[in-house]
Length: 516
Image 1 (spheres, rainbow, N blue to C red):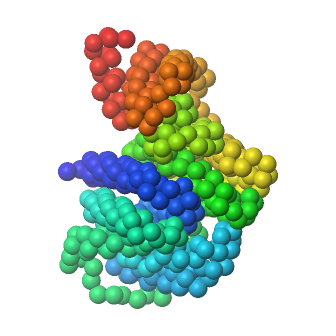
Image 2: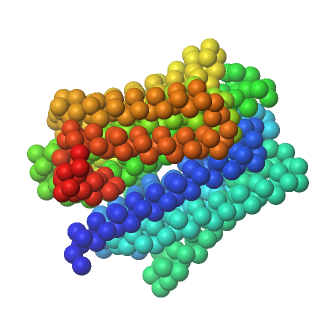
């Protein structure tokens, strides 16, 4: 099998495992909220970004850094791997112990002293991170993606199963929301252990004796603290937005039960936003190998052409997902979370999906061509805008203000990323014709969704079962109308359709049967 084919298959396998992991991460929060309530969701979600940042580092950012370091020094692979492990182990030990000790101070930063127990539970997830990240990076450097993919799915599946069991038990015995939240975060340790056991089985006979090299330790430490930091922060934009909400919400609105429940209601929206941008980011992941190949050949024209193709494909999915999620938010809120509280604020988060997807696509492109610093700069600017808008809007409009601030933060982030992308590669644009044709596909879908939603409201289908039926009708009908008009108006070329999930099949059916 050729190396190029191996890389393509590996990228596809990682993309699939990423889908499954993110779907698991999305769905478990629905039964969690149904069992623990909005206050319970507030406790879990407020400290969740700290766990998710550690998990994302172990799943995505650090393995990529490990793979890059070993590829740059293949003749000293064992020394580099052990050096990375020792550096990461030292950092994990320091941050884990420090987090445990200063948990009371961190809880005060979040505005809720009772968060100490959940915060300490999160620190337990740090200790297995180094060995998992190094093993995944080792396999990825050897173009073996199966161990990483299977370990991702295993880790998330075990964690979710344990989390729901622990939550059900905690609610049944009358434990308070802080105890349930802490126990839920401890279950991540079970997922990490399962993942580690699987990776060790794949790595049997390949690890070798520990080797310590001061020269490699210095080199690895420098890379992790410079480009490694840039890769990590750029990869965690959505989680860092959530962290800003956690740090500002209660502090700005007051340490009251009503505020915490409002925060829990607002936290319903982030899993939905994550789900909406899932396919757009998967497109960028699947296309990175081709982009990297053209970039390594120093073929600037082909690189720019591929970037524009990737941009158009991603924007098509992002536009459909944003309009769709925005339009179905009220019935979706009822179907998933039993009532329509916070729908306006959640609609602001839904509107964020377009710019958030665009940001994630550009970040993936910049990272793949060793331009991590550009991606880092754009993310930091967006986070600063989000923080400033939270400070201004939260006291005035509550959770609606937080949704508006997230929208503004990602809008700034996407604008900055586009400017930096053009600075790196010259003028990269989807083109005016594309945007005109995209609107011709989006508007009919939006009209259909609006009319059907109004009819359901008029008919009074406000039950959870009725809302589920409405969401199903809106999703199937809206997606069908969008695909029909997108194909009819030739929004994308055949090559661009092939980048989308099932896009090549849709295009072939349209072209062969002439059904449109």
